[in-house]
Each structure stands twice: as structure tokens, then as C-alpha cells.
Amino acid sequence: MKKASSSFLVLFFAALLVSFQSFAQMSDIVSERVQQTLRRQERLRLSDLLRVSPYEEREMEVLSLTIMAQSYVGQSTLQVLQMGRAIAAPQIIRRQSQVRIVLPARTSLEGIEILAQDELFLESVTAEVLRLRTPVPPTYPTPYPPTYPQPERQPVPNQMISLQVMQDVRMQQEIQLDTLVRQQMGLTLAGAEIQRVIVEAMPLGYGRAASVQVVLNSRLVGEERFLSTTQQRLPLLIQSYEEVRTLGLLVRGDARVQSVSIRVGQVRPQYPQQPQLPRIQRVTVGQEIGSYNVLELSRVLPYESRLIRSITLEARTRNGVRAEVALATPYQVLGTLVVTQTPMRPVIRLFTPTSPRDLRLQSYSQVLIDSLEIEFETGY
Image 1 (cartoon, rainbow, N blue to C red):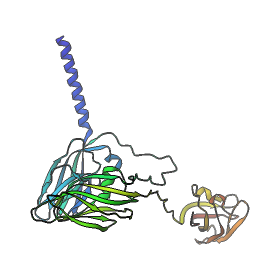
Image 2 (cartoon, rainbow, N blue to C red):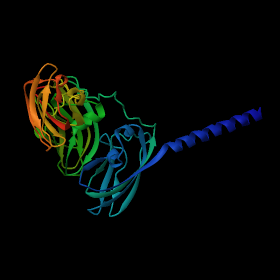
Image 3 (cartoon, one colour):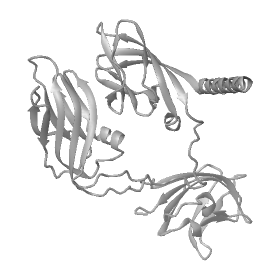
Image 4 (cartoon, rainbow, N blue to C red):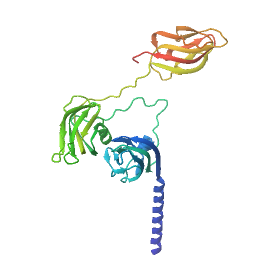
């Protein structure tokens, strides 16, 4: 019985050792030399500093950060945030400092920012990370990549959105509420009307005034409310019928903002807009046409559904001869032009805009078509 028990313990510790080794192999060090000046209250995304792609960002956890920096003002404060909330104690940066910050367990790289409370020079950032699995970028069926962006999810009318801020402000700062709504709730405020904003905050520093005011579409709206230690929950009435493009909270003075609630009014659905296609498109051809060879435009514009208004040729002939090039359909010639050995840019304009599926370039002489410049009909 003792022998069986000993064998079990040996197997258990062996499995534990293998598990620990596999875990250790998954950790990695990512380091980047930044060499950048951070202004007061400036934020930088950690994934941008480490040059990590969005696909890798979602599959990595950060164990610790080592930051090398210099203060311009004798002593600066640096803070690590995630989704706008502090996740580690503030770090003091002096003339030449290297600080190591241990982050809470299971801290995803996504949404981590470095905030400079005062002006400083950021030399380098090193992160000890845990790769959860090998990231695989999304693939799309060829030859058609996704054309239009998917619409973001909007709040419902009369919804109350609650945000955790937990941020200290010194002197003055605008907190981007629309960004926090997107980060914490996965919603967009675009198309929504705002009825009121409720701020839970308190002043920092005895005898110093601190106030809050809403910034709607880069414009101060509503009244400015001053904070007090006795009343920490302040409703800010907006009652605006203006759709949100940007929404912020301007904090003047030294204050600690704990949370913000937003009462949404009416919501107008937002639809993705089609990207504006260029009216003129240049196509490289490099093909010779002649008595037995025509150029079908559908071959050089395989996915184009717009109608063509005019075509400019960059073409030339061989041996100094002149040649006539015709733009035609299977049933008629729509226009002709003369090409010589000297590179030219003649234009054929169509009386009726025509689909590229019906058009071809043809000639009885040998003509080299270098490229085409195609003008499409507007409104298609």
C-alpha cells in the first residue's frame, strides 16, 4: 500500500512540474524603446507602445511592467489604467527612474493605458506577458474583402448607463465619456440624445474649489456644478435634442471622480455609410492589341459595376507607324483615336455611360496599351 501511495505522489509531482514548465514556457518578454515626451495628462495605449497587433492584444495577459523614464519637473507621477480605471499604485518618476509595476492576476493587455500626471520623457517599456494561445488573424474569402463596417450597438431609449471612472484630476482635465461607454459597455452614443449626467465625485485638497460640466460635441452645455464633501452625487441636467458625436466631462480643480451615470433620451438608428469610391481610376495594362487580339475592359476591371464616362489611353505603336484604336461594343464603335510611336494620352468620351462588361479596345495595327485612366459616371 505504501508503495502504491509513493508511486501516486511521484506521478502527481511529475505532472505538477510539467504543468509548471508549460506555464513558464508560455510567458514572454516584450520590450520597446519609446523615446517619447509625454505631456501632462497624456495617455498612451500599452499595445501601441509595444507594437502589438489587435489580434495579439486580445490573447495576451500582462504580469508586470518595467518602465524607464525621466521627469522634466523634478518629480512626476505615472499611472497604469485599464478601461479608464487605475489598476496599480501611482509611480513616482524622478530625474532618472526605473520602476517595476506588478499588475493584478489575469490582467488583459486590451485597454491598458499609461497616464502621465506630469510632463516626463518615456525611454522604454518592458512587459512580462502571458500568451494565451497563438493568435490567428481573421481571413476573408477571396477575392472579396469586407466592404462595409458593421454598425456598433446603440443604447436603448431612456437607458441609464453607469460608468466606473475612479480617476484623480489635477488642475483641469476632460474625461472622454463616449470612449468609456465604448470600452466598458460596448456601446456607441452616436445618434443618441442625452437627458442628464450624474457625477459622483469629491474635491481633493482643503479649501480648493472643484467643479464639473458636460462637454457635448466639443461645446460646454448645461450648468457648472461645484463639488463638496457633503454632496458627492451631482445631477447635471442637459435635455439636449442634439445627437451625440462626442461626450465628455470637464473637471476643473483637484477632484476624484468615482463614477458617472448617463441618462439616454431618444436614439436614432445609425447605418454604415458606403465608402466613397474614386471617380477616376488608373489601371496598369501592359498588353498589346492588334488584328487578332482585342482588350476586353471586363478583364482589367473584373469587379467594377459602375458605368464608364470616358477613357484616357497611355499607348504607343511600334516602328514609327500611326494606328487607329477604337472603343467598341460587340455591336458598334463608340469612338476612335490615333496613336503614334510617341507616348500620348488621347481621350475617348462616351455619349452614353456604358458598363465595362460591354466595352473593348481594338485596332488593325499593333498597339501597346501601357495603362488606362477611366472616368466613371457619378452617382454609381
